[in-house]
Amino acid sequence: MAYDTLVRECERLHGELAQARRDGVSRAAPAARAPSDVAAILGRLPRPDDGDSGERRLNLTMKGTQFFALERLVAHFSLSKPAVVERLIDWADDTLTKSLYDDEAAFNRYIDRNRNEK
Image 1: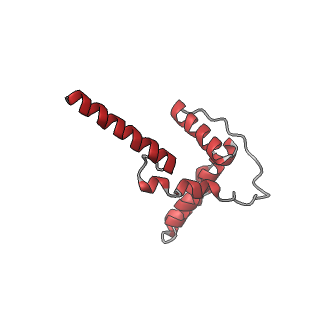
Image 2: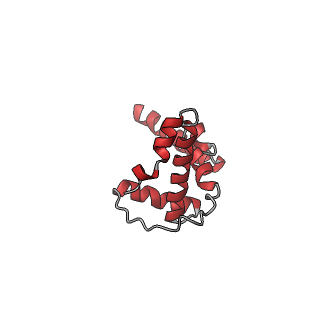
Image 3: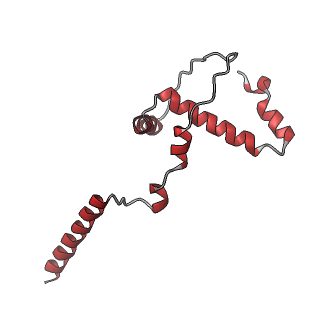
């Protein structure tokens, strides 16, 4: 009897899951289904080229977890790997620069190219 009850409950839950999938409902939290900050970051246009900066090559080794995450972002947003990395860097730089707006000394330390160049 208890077994039959569990089987019926399992069938009911399978039905609800199938209906939710047909309705396009995800198990993710509602906030995760909304347009994300990542979509806004990767969806925006890259910064205009700075004619004086030129291009630099970056050889990068990363852990498998981050590599596969990069692959997923590339596939999901239909961007190249360099485009994903560049847009994330632009976002991080813009965010930090704006956070230093009221602290001129910290901003100058951040911008100081002699300290940042290797």
